[in-house]
Amino acid sequence: MTDQASAADALVFFGATGDLARKQIFPALYGMVAHGELDVPVVGVAFSQWSVDDLRERARSSVTAALPDADPEVLDRLIGLLRYVDGDYRDPATFEALRDALEGRHRPVHYLAIPPALFGTVVQGLASVDLDRDARVVVEKPFGRDLASARELDAVVRSAFPEESIFRIDHFLGKEEIMNLLYFRFANSFLEPVWNRDHVASVQITIAEDFGVQGRGPFYESAGALRDVIENHVFQIVALLAMEPPAYQGYFAVHQAKANVFRAMRPLTRHDIVRGQFEGFREEPGVSPTSDTETYVAARLFIDSWRWAGVPWYLRTGKKMPTTAHEVVVEFKKPPQPLFDDAMMAQRPNHLRFRLQPDGEIALGARIKTPGEEFVGEQRELTVPTAGAQARRPYERLLGDALQGDRALFTTEDSVEAAWTVVDRVLTDHAPAIRYQPGTWGPAEADTLIGADGPWYEPKGRKA
Image (cartoon, rainbow, N blue to C red):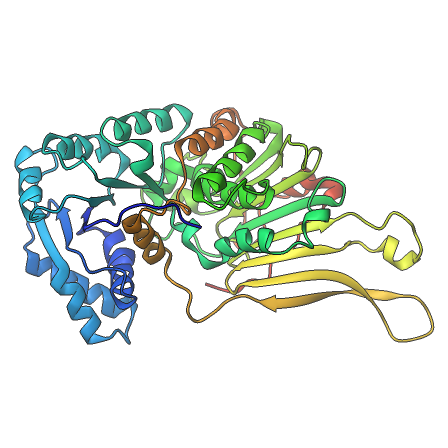
């Protein structure tokens, strides 16, 4: 599902000496070389007083740590593509050196693997030496902290790049199981007749992690689960499940369909969310001893569209949960006629379950008659595993798409603003975070939130 665009002739990534590059970008670049998707110069830019040899050694150690079985020949090809520019982003000479390092390449992709506070400085620096012309820019999540800052960030980037040249990257959208949601929705005709308010009772989405903030206390203290997970990751899942069929085969049609879902979401109020904080979060380095930042959120969302009017979407995410798992459960309404008493009294009606992590799986929950003369049965799941050994790393897929100009798995500014509009009020207008014990499913108030549509499904996960 691609629209035509010319391939880039160079990849520049700012923040080349940072943790994101070490943990994610270099292994992704290796994968791109291995799949024949990367054969252009890769220019790292940072202010670390490194040399190109230092960068190449970092790339080699990063890849071998992540991929112990890496092919030495492929790794050598990647190393041979690397260039490096060291300099302060505030110094015009840094961008002049970058222009020289590109050696006349005219269609670069600039990947900003840097904090959003530096976007403006880098964008202005690129424009000062005409490196914004015929170029693309990839900006890393988060796309602002609220609606106002998202608009300010967009204005900064669009001061040099048109919308069609801006690729807003969220690695979550590059995951195989997330893309499978889109495929499953529209590659199968049997879903459409029942995929609406007439047949769906509710939808539950859970993104649970059994670990804490893992040394990222200062970041999490400034972000919180509502910003970090619900507003972007979970909303993207909602959009893929709730969107109308795209009008034609192309990424712009998909983006428009997703944006319409965000616009139809009813803005959340303080009565629609439960915020929690695990015991011990305030003792994390970089976290205030009086912190009210949430490490858990449960939310009740409504989508005021013709298809989904009145159907509640229950969303939750949390750290220090009993397991690590990402799951979606679409629960269908009970049969209208009580032909079999046990089926009508069953706690759980039919459902469709998507396991996104740790192992991809799609399951249909249905009642099956048990052997014997009586018409009684039990709920069973018909399961199809979807995980495969050939799954690509998200950054590998997304950076490859950016080089080719394929925006299908990236998000647009209108979607970003529409999503922030849904949560903007409750970012500040909310009840205090409720403390919960590590290893539990969060505050008991989340059970009250889901009420008669519950209980929450416990996802099938595993320890991370």
